[in-house]
Image (tube, helix red, strand yellow):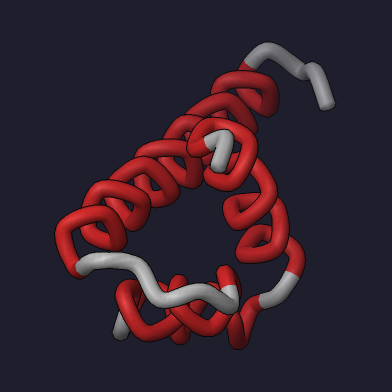
Length: 72
């Protein structure tokens, strides 16, 4: 599995689906299991969840900075 690609895909899904994003923020591990459709060890899921959270935060920061600079 290409972890970076999965993080990008999941972050995009969360960005476009508010209820899914809320579910992820409340219960990241079960939400990831549902999205991935595979059973991974808890430690791998935790690492993936942290990667997705980081990606979401980077996207938010980029949107904020773009707004400050007048770019969209």
